[in-house]
Image 1 (tube, one colour):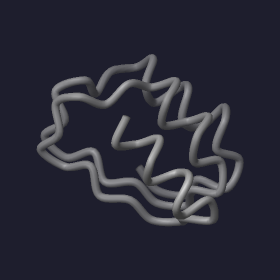
Image 2: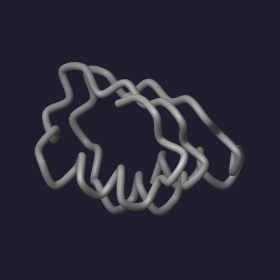
Image 3: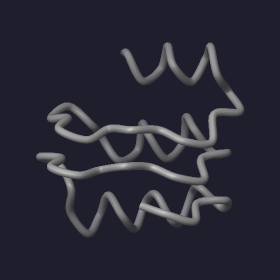
Image 4: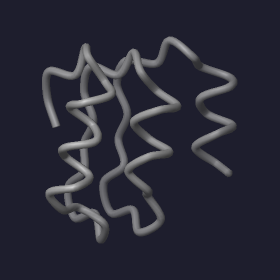
Length: 65
């Protein structure tokens, strides 16, 4: 729900720091923040291949993860 609120308030958000986060879901991030250019996922408990695939598939502007 926090990510949905962030996406609603900042639909053009380009940079997001989700380091040390344990609640991230790939679909929520990649579909809510399609303008994302940079995302910090350091020490994220949900970091896996599927998350990265979803991010780069849905966030066409993503340059750095």
